Image (cartoon, rainbow over all chains, first blue to last red; front, side):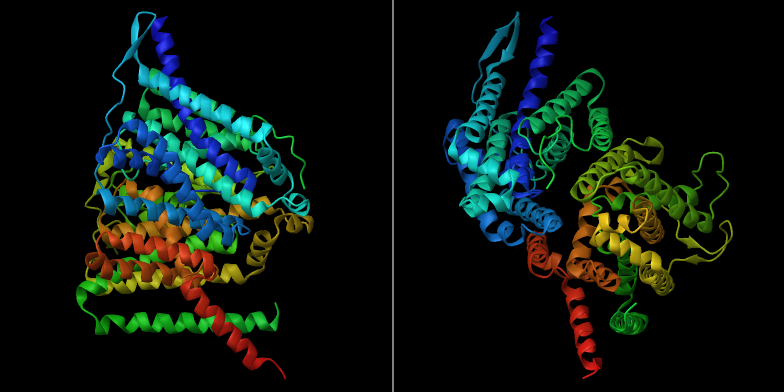
Length: 287
Length: 337
């Protein structure tokens, strides 16, 4: 019983992190129609921000706050310098952001070297769950992820900003005609998506080893998650992340980590092929 | 075909012939190590040509093109190393080439059928799925112990002119160089003939507006499957050519890394023109060999920056832009006043 619960908790942990990554990716895609191949590198930048803060003598908590801010600022810069100049050329945004991911990776190699690093776990506490000790930090991560997802829902469904953003998602030209400043929304959305990735990187940092290639391992599952879940809604990517993350984690636990990724990727491709609109079909009018 | 287009082809053909002649005389003036270095760039150039056909001409952004290059390289290696189960006595280079073309083509055909037929995926969805396929295939290659797993296969023999080995080996720099150049030129000629045929016109129409092409009565899904298959066959041939010279095949050849690289070559050279894409591969590889020792870790940063800037401001690519300008100039000169 306790074992099963631990397994479920570990799987939820991965699922929630994947949700953070996929959510940022999906918001940027939904609103701006930009496929951001540098999203994994935004996550990496978040993790390295924590590392930098720690090296400078700061605490992990300071790094956790700094990471979304720093990466959000990088996102703002990327949007201003690159994305806004090509966002009407759909496939080119894939290429340009891919190039950016190369740049970020190489910049990290230059600054920190190609080796891997680790960040010290800020909480040594563990909590007794049905008699089995479970690291409190993992529970904390899950709380952060749940709170962030809830905040994103609140932002998009309960604020004027969210209303305007959903208006732009539904019909960009019409929203623009109605006086919504789409430029400002694009900028904020891209920065917010980047900040989500930065936060995901920061909360992951103590649990994994940091290296310049770490982003890619999350980018592809996150992409598959949003395609499996379906675009055009916020619930879709979350459902997709749950499906992809849980399948991956449970296969890795019960069979082998080597085959987990294969099983997940192949299943995801089949699902995408059979249900191109995703598990949560968007009720979005085709324009 | 309009007269203007024919003149456009004239410019590209002329430029292509000029480049071919330049490469044909190049070994006379450069040192021998560079000759064999450039010979291997020709394999990369053919690989870039396959992506230019699939992506530039037909609009299928394949983010996993190295799957087919790698499959071709593995197929060639398994045949010439006598590792095909049940046919260990066969070590023929010629059968190796056949396998290196057929195996990736069949693989691409199956993937293409699955992805395109009956509704199917397009645009970015296709790109992301091909990216995931590249991951899957690389992971499979790493875990395929028979083919050396992570270490891959070593001591792959060079091209052997005998029917089943035993003939002369194409091993020295000069014969290698001209063999690879000839295969590259033939591959480019075949691809560009395809691109200019009626069939190629339909592919271009699909890139421009798929729904409209379908309305005109073309089964666009089948056209896309066939274009993807042809691209894979050429990529496989390039992989086979590569491995006979390089002598070593390992999982990185089949996965994400090389797929990303070939995309950069093609985008920097020019996706819309076969010649530009091939020269892009040669130029980037050459620049890498020139500058990577000088710039060290900065080289990749520079390459990434160039790539982003080219995508943003020069959608035709560096070489493609030159060709396009020459074409415009030729068009102006011959336009009746």
